[in-house]
Length: 251
Length: 259
Ligand SMILES: Nc1ncnc2c1ncn2[C@@H]1O[C@H](COP(=O)(O)OP(=O)(O)OP(=O)(O)O)[C@@H](O)[C@H]1O
Ligand SMILES: [Mg+2]
Image (cartoon, rainbow over all chains, first blue to last red; front, side):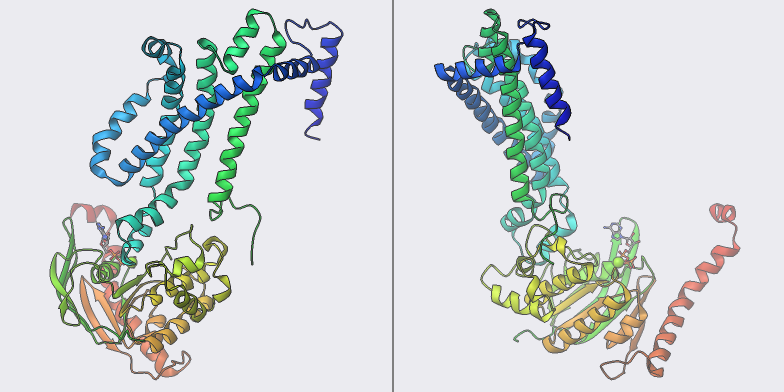
């Protein structure tokens, strides 16, 4: 039943476009979009553009997310590091990273570094904040218990702090994945010589609305894929968590 | 088992939080293998006393000796059972019990888990257990380390009456088998009399009553001796609380602020 309305809309869209009621320059028919997709795939362009965008996303995510994760952990365990660095990070957070695009283009040109840098910056804050917050909000009673049971600093970190912070960290990751795609779309659309955004902008110049629409759908699909991956990670690593438990196992 | 009870000696122990003196001049001796209850009004410093003995707090003054040896901080032979069970939600039941054993002694962990009646729940997540079962896991976790002194801070406070009775019996049995020294903080005078060799009442920051419980085990709650002893202790506890309560009632609220 939930699919009834979307399917009806799709049929309506196809029908209005086919009957010429909706100019294909405004919005091509769904079938035309699919045809354009097959066309691109056959020419081998599609895979190449997706590959470029994907590589940028992963690269930026790993760099920005990795640094943010490490810094979040560090500020989560060390008070000294927290007083030294946290305020600074919170201050920089107030700058919208997309506002830096002109500056970033000045620094890096329109090459790969610019996009990776922007994605890394965008991904940094959600992961940093949630890692740090997760570490800081682990129940002190449980940490105390760990000390009573003879856990050293390393064991406390691996067995209590990190797993205790994991739900919060994964929330950060999921949020960061959303920011990652958004940043990439904006950066690729503004200045690029390859990638999905470039494909769309290029098609716009030749009035290939079907390719433009397909690019939009492609972004949506990849975003969905990233989200599903994050969900999968949550299911796998947070089985123990009451909020993520699906169904009741055992008895 | 190799672990026998430790002799605990507390001399002139005091603890101050900021300007508030919570405990002062606490002197207490607990023989090896003895089971002692600590009771008192809420906020009188029972948990603080236990945390000092555990080494989780540093005393402002006084000393704590374990087997005549001055205790400084955490001691591997002392284990604590808290009111909230403090299980690691991300570890399976057996791994919770085996915490601090260093991985190898999982067989022993499994054996102790069986002793508390949860052998078949070893692979479950803690979230799948009831409150009483979680508390039993916490008990197993304490016992698997073969403590020579077990500190219990109202471990049964959150349980329903029936589960409480069951847990009390379990704790008594395991204490008899293992021979550790036990210090139990409780609100429940019945519980104190049912389990302990002595009941210590804390008032105004120090023990004000030290009552031996000379009833044969297992103790029968319906026996007149039992009821008489519970009554006597309760009366003693209440007489300590009556004075401030009465003055609180008779003096009007506005009058109290000016004095
Ligand atoms: N870390 C702390 N900092 C400041 N004050 C504290 C701290 N811990 C305890 N206190 C104070 O010490 C007093 C005794 O606390 P404690 O927890 O030992 O009481 P208790 O006898 O265990 O009470 P209850 O029966 O309610 O558990 C209280 O007034 C409490 O406010
Ligand atoms: Mg207490």
